[in-house]
Image (cartoon, rainbow, N blue to C red; front, side, top):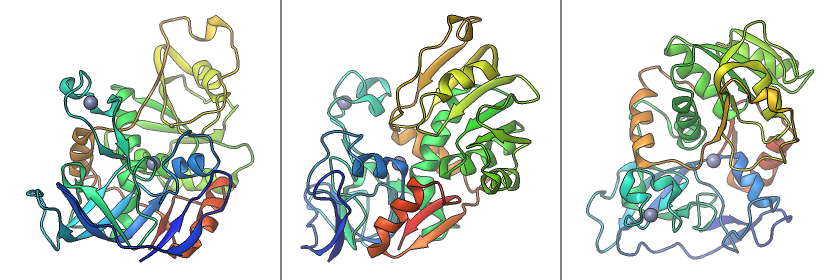
Length: 326
Ligand SMILES: [Zn+2]
Ligand SMILES: [Zn+2]
């Protein structure tokens, strides 16, 4: 099969012919129908996330059709269409796994990071960690829901019942979660890079009440804010925009250093938290909600061999919505 392979951080991916992986035990083999490109992939390529499996096949927003099942697989069968998200395996017996926090499992394995992912024609995945996909979505349309959607949803839940919600960084996760937030009756205040008129117009189209530059003060005090951009300086900026008691949720897996800031910004029982990975429960909940909203994704399609170009466009902020490899 053909796969785009990362041999070393800092180097572009290379297209190579490799053997089709065999499904073992509870794994299933999947023909990859579509695979979303995530900012996390960029952090792995750029060496900001340490110790990936090497050589590595990236990609953790995989839509695939089961082509073979492992000897002990019992949940999925050949022909079924499923999603493979970032959380690829957990030990199921540590204190985190046993308390509904499998996203924090210290032995967890992650698709497209410590396990091979979906920048390829085929992949294998543990059937217990595959996600059911709503029938109504096409392969390309549903791919971004598998990480941007799931992590965005977990971030949104963490904001509680915030009515006035700030979102910093308007990419794949933001465009999905704005639709869910609007559906729930919340108002979204979208912050983009200053001068990013195209991004601001896109945020408006997705339902944002107000759009502005990331250092601008919104017209209303925010109840909570989610930061999707990997920029630490946005933490004090968001704290300055939320009301006393408000929460700032950092939704990304990697962020540049957070500059020091006066205690006054945190005072008033404001809090800052991060979202790490996802649980299978998040996935099940979100896949129920998405078609009801209904969430529509804006995607740009790339061929498998154009993966480097997709990553470059994501890095430069040129993409609107999400990139998907087919
Ligand atoms: Zn565990
Ligand atoms: Zn991701």
